[in-house]
Image (tube, rainbow, N blue to C red; front, top):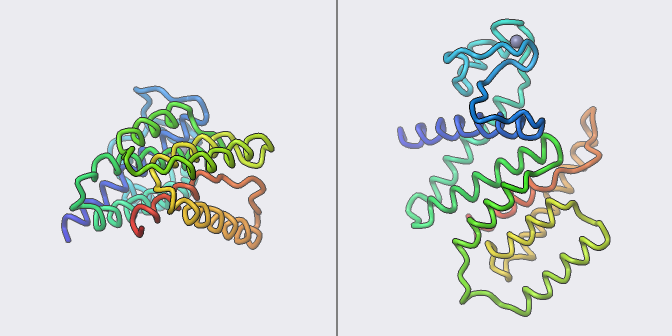
Length: 228
Ligand SMILES: [Zn+2]
């Protein structure tokens, strides 16, 4: 139990880091020595203001300096990441591929946040994901003919601009990670969850006009990884 709590909070810390990274990356303000600061008054945060979840809670969701509210998306991302870490650890703690799969999912998580923040995914993350995928590939299991057909379909999607550039690059990489027989299920989960999200957004005040698809592709990959 204690281990799960530790894993949950470790996940919250990673979520906080990933969200800040995605925010800086999409605004082109990313530097290695960047310190966290308030989005409104730009005052650098003290060490006690950097604890995921707790700092938000003890500050009543407001900045200590300018008293303006901190977006709730921060604690939501932190809590979701914590829960995902616990879920992943529960299913994968005994698996020898724990580290490599964990890194792959971490890269996908940051890519998803970049897509949500700005509908843009850095090529360096695409490349990192490709390297992770190549390290996991089992050439003996590849069925070349279905793979050729799948690639032809992807090229068609690019030709007719039916799908965003980052999504296509990601789909090419996913071919290395997902067995070809599970690929239709993977596409079905990604499309259905994206569609349901779009429909759900019509009931809130601000309907989403352009869907960030990377989070749904990542979610579908996670489902395939855990349940197939
Ligand atoms: Zn402030």
